[in-house]
Length: 120
Image 1 (cartoon, helix red, strand yellow):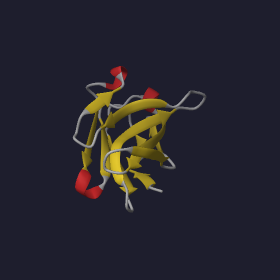
Image 2 (spheres, one colour):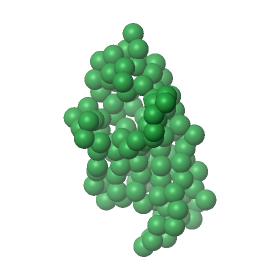
Image 3 (tube, rainbow, N blue to C red):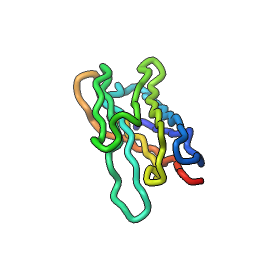
Image 4 (cartoon, one colour):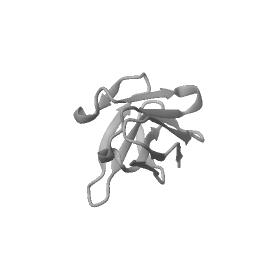
């Protein structure tokens, strides 16, 4: 099993920035795709962005240009740089890591989530 731990959430004013981090403890597994999701109160969890092990990225259309996902494979860490934050970005942000052997994904692990609140 792979454990995933997020950090970096907090309270920020509209227009501000935050950087989230997520570390996956790989044990003996290979970490494949990693991604960020968010869930606002009363809403379903939605994809924010994900990134493959070779750096290919995918973003929710509504967030392109404001959010940037990146990863450091040596540290099994994925980052989410969030700029020009809006109140509607308020949510719990979750990290997901797909893991398995070097050639096959065997499962996914989710972190506990980190709260991001955008408010003046």
